Image 1 (cartoon, rainbow, N blue to C red):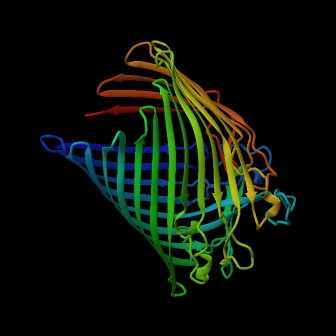
Image 2 (image 1 turned 135 degrees about the vertical axis):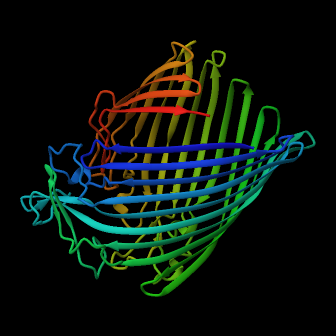
Image 3 (image 1 turned 90 degrees about the horizontal axis):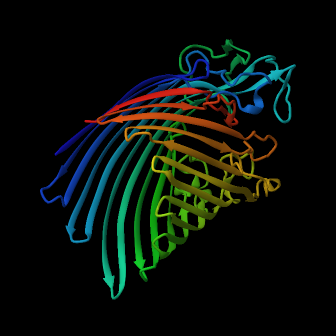
Length: 519
């Protein structure tokens, strides 16, 4: 019998004014092994609670010139509370030579409660900063939207599989077969006072040049009435099989499949109406690995995957919607990949190069904005490119690692907005890369420095605004004196000012010290 206890407590202030967080976590685990170690049984419980002031300020395009990236836009009383509890039990049993049984049961309960202002549009001289400026009356302020939500999400998953190896003649097989059953129960309550019809509008106002100058139009300090109260239950059952076939000592083939059957039911408690639908999906995959020598292996693969519940049921289902809109062919992805893995200079350098093509099909859209409850399937997004990575040992105590990525991500089909065809997908930089060097003067001490590059990208699919590329330098030093370990890390060593998305600036120079003790 073995026992392990992991815990964490932390309080942190953000570089953004008024933004902070506190985390509490504890996770005990117990492991049992029989005398011959053919049976291993592990049970783990995790409690994780995070309280934070949200950082949900306006987007880059809605900020006036000269506003510091260190400016936070939280109103007094804004909060997000996350509480997670997970219990998992896992059994592994070798019941025969080369054959193993695995069973896992997990229960996950996630609770989230938030109440805050978010987003916002700046008004200057009675016009907004939007692509098409609109008239406004809050001159000199950012007008924020408001919403609150309370959600309980309970998920139980039961999985088992059998794996083993055998031969059919001269051909070797490594087989994996199994099944899983899951149930997800979601109960979101929402007070949305920034969109929709039939509800009053309440806003927060904040001066971006002086965040202390803020106010809101909420009628009282009490939480406003709920605008939507739903209960969603998703049940699924899947069967999977995978066989790694050694056709020759140098050539292997991977064959796999997965069959899923799912049911989704949604209940609107405000209208006291319910609707449900079900469907099945089949997901094949195939791949080949050719290893002409111990140093080089070539691979190619194809796989197909489906989004559960038709690509949108897990998010929201309107009980007034005709089931035919749910029963349409679900959203699915197809991925093609080819690559090579190599070892060089007596394994002192390892490289990997891959070329890929990923296509997302049957993307959901709303054909008529006046009927938001009616969805249809259309559209295709394509992401293709290459990735190269390496890790190597330059000297006995000097190591390097890095990589480069090239990506072309475009809209290929869009029935709702045909003008979007051939436009670049949002948040998809064409070029990315990184390079890190680690030096070990002794076995216990190390130092590392590296640079990460992210190319320019479009934050929105309309491609009207482009975010600048950036380089970020990070460094760390660590000392290991078993059972103690201490690490000092510096992020953004040069204090580079950049935006990692249109709604979130990059963190300025920051320091992190971590002390670990293992027993």
